[in-house]
Length: 109
Image (cartoon, rainbow, N blue to C red):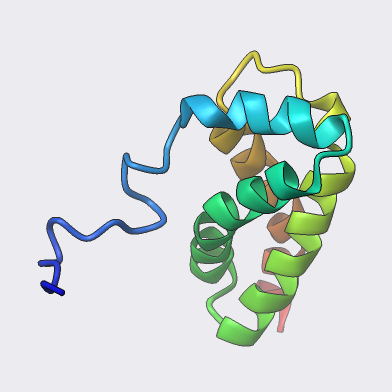
């Protein structure tokens, strides 16, 4: 196995994950009750969600908690995904909306 250099490594923020054409199909399948499609969708975007929460909340523990909340919100709201934007953009908005109140609390202390 060859090691990937940092420039070639696939990270949660890399373009290899962004706007995957499989996302729309996975969302449709997950809404119909396809559990493997739902798992694939969550696994594909989990790192992105955690990275975003980590940058917004600074604490790894808070970011991990927020990631769980965000993923639950994403899963329970899948039926409302209209596909007008990429799935990643939609998930980003949910993550920001979830983390913003917590971030304000961090600045108050």
